Length: 394
Image (cartoon, rainbow, N blue to C red):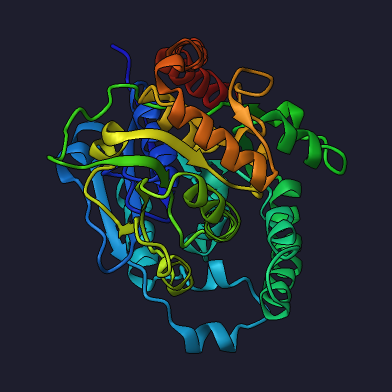
């Protein structure tokens, strides 16, 4: 009888429900791993977050969440260390992980993100296979974010980039790490310029569950929909670009349309920017984005930073909606050089949105072509097998 090896999977948010980008990627990763491994899930969550226990129990034999307490005094005291790591230290989680490793026969530890590295403090990691997931090269991402915004914003992200780079490089040099799991070749190629990690790395693109939510909300009318987690700076930067540069053009040409901005942690800057527009709605976090996609005519994906595959793009394709995106939206995805409408020019972005709205009946051929590309590159069983083979070989 095949005995599944046990994985301790550590992540920085509650992966279920899968209701925004990062959670979707992590949730699908856990599902793929659970095909061939027994998964013990350990995660952080914000105070207002929820955990879908039924889904967690379906894919994990055990799961335990801890509240992320952003201790700003601690962060100030350790100002020379990355905020994203210091703010995720949780003593109760560390104790739980230590007790779990002592009580159970854990074979493998998967760190879903480098930001959870302090959860392994004080442990003898030589007893386990260690794998690190790399959706982005973080110091490069912060450097990119630092290229935009006001001087204060630029200073903060530039400083974070400098703080996280040596930590990240130490992981790449560590002999304790058995393997790295990237989601695209570009990030792997980039890091291999300094450290040849190809023999202990694999590229597994994110999977998206195409069994979409078919729920509808009565009388919900959406012409253009934008979805994201706006606590993530690249998403906020992208949506502010759209609000400030595209919405005025779109509304001038089509004054009666409705634009919805849906997703977690909208900022005061966003609310202030849309306050002058009559038919622009910011919903905040919703239970399910499904009804909003179902009601929408066109999806906008304005994003300029970040190397990972954008889950919101896969989501929009799965709902078979016409899409307008910036180049950052399709970067490192299988939608490069396809029929998808792509531009970084705000005038052309706006024109594309208007064109699609005015000729929505002519979009189905392109929508179906993009959906086929998603299906052809979105094989759950294949990706589950890739995880199984890679973890067992390394």
